[in-house]
Length: 446
Image (cartoon, rainbow, N blue to C red; front, top):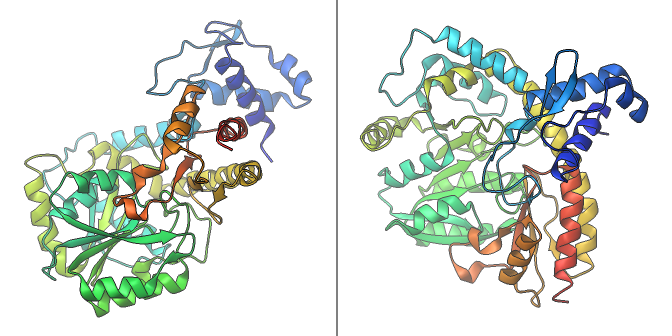
């Protein structure tokens, strides 16, 4: 159940979004809200402090609390329900922890400058070794390269020549849209393999590994984007085994690894021979104020990757900023990262309960909901009667933004008509209202 202070904060935010509270408007006194919500003064104070930290309100000594002037914070306005974005909202984070870590990091590294190397700060890499061991990734500092996230990692691996001398990249269908856009703009030979709620057909995967010249297989085993599904333990083990057998590299994108929804989950890397798996991840989904990620590279390819990243350095800087690295190091050292991810995990579980309950109304209209989803994403398969192009436009007119299913498919032959929902930057109330609008628009086609 949501804390009373969050209910108070959400109610005030909603009043602002509806235009009921304008910039400069004075908010009710602490005593007034204490009586209204039948709660303690501390709960109201905490609600107001949360809104202050998010720059929604400000306080004036002896005068009270007031609505702050709003800034244009991006493409979608405050009254828009954004099921499209996969990025969390900075305002939802514990900003006091962030300020603490930023200050600590800037104090520690104020006399340092970031060298032009491609590995990242040694002390951060050491802490990542310990951090990764919690997720059954046992590696050494030498194998870890700090970078600016998954997209940069994938473009680097595309350019890297692998020892197997193969040239084709295998991707799941559907998969991460940003990566596919990059592939479409390159001269890389790409083929796909179907991924659905049951995972991957292992017989088909083995056939492709055996018959095609697969350089690497890009796979998102858990919290899949856009399906929101997780591969079974048997499938993860089998992928590792087939990679070794057919000398195919696996690029395992575990972009949401810190969200510990399944404590029994082990990555493909943990089942592998450590020679055929690149393990890549990012902290940007849970710490959206900075772009930072990393690669765990097979030992035999460390030097080749270093040389490749050094060449890229002449065109774009490959390593995350010193301040981003130092801040992440402090988050790990102080254990604040685990506090942070625990809060996000709890919030996600609550949102998914709300989402799943409200999706039931769509199933009666013939929408097929991919079950057992996790992370931020959920894919809705639409009935044949529905024109998804028109649906997406009609939803946008009603200020509901969703992901068009075609964005996540490289090859139309795999396409399953649908839309992707992300709960990364929406509230419980947004979910309820948004699903209701989707239901209303679907009825136009039924």
